[in-house]
Image 1: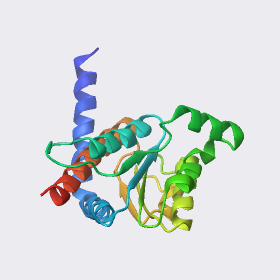
Image 2 (image 1 turned 90 degrees about the vertical axis):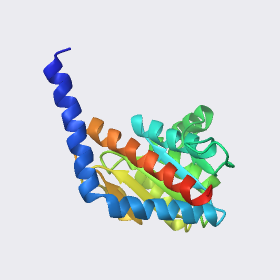
Image 3 (image 1 turned 45 degrees about the vertical axis):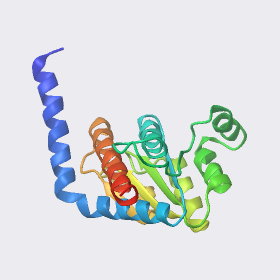
Length: 191
């Protein structure tokens, strides 16, 4: 691969994270505080997304249930939706793919929980449907997205909007947000 192409990709990633730092700290801090309050209050985090964003949701849940940096702590209640293939395919087949996360929210969510949706476009129909379902059930809601004003924002109490329209750059920034969130939870709850 051309070294100039590599340099351009890395520089674009750095520039996106610098814009994230300049514009998203208040929203990211609110998300961290809400996640801590949810877990402290006995609630759980439900996380969802498609494709790479599904991996971000699973990554966050894995770090919280397992360990992030502090190995001497108990697990935190976090579930990545859409990770069970039979459930995902049954709901998708019987009701349509746009319902896969909302149905799991309906089954697993309770007032006092927090749903975090990941959607680079801000408009993934199944993430929007899950956020809508969560709001109807009294869950707190948050979305991590890009700078486009998608329908997910209408159903989110907190929105961390990465200032980019590039899917790879948004996803890279979402991973930073996941790690910040996990560190905040551990710092607050593990002492």
